Length: 237
Image (cartoon, rainbow, N blue to C red):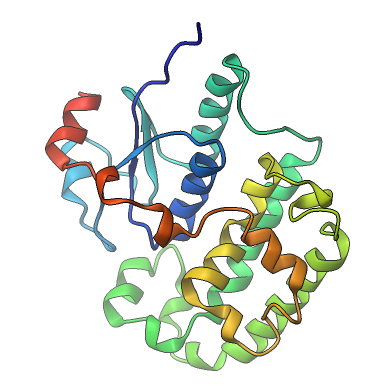
């Protein structure tokens, strides 16, 4: 008989693209988890009270083990699932696609609508993302979105095809898809880039099928997944 997994908690907020990456993995593997929601900006007193000073989300926990980043969390959970004959398919180029995903993050940052970058957000992220503090941030969008469009066209032509929605024409997401698609999925579904000229389904049909191979974040999160700070804290102390 397969052993049950320890309880899993995502200490994050749904809007964060890095948080969505971890959740994409959990949804793809049909792994139950709870969510202890954190503020959009620091301070995050719930995490501070646990002695966690790492300032980025997501922070994730498996039982009493805490992981401050997606890579270590996904590796750990993948190992536990594989012991049960589950987990996502591994591939020779998983780490390369992981780097592709992080590259998409940095390309996409200058494309954010200027009104999104409030003074509070710019101050909170100034050390992580200095581009937000630039006085000419609003002028970066045109060039940024042109670069992002070219980047997505590369995915459309190079590693997506019509055999299936996922990388290499696969029918189901593999580890490579989780590592690569998160920021693109956030941009198109959460921010609404699909409404931007040149980034819609007509221009990028394979990219859109790719992101739709995983659930929409807003629809996947249910009220009964939310965990109070008190209950979440008891689990890991």
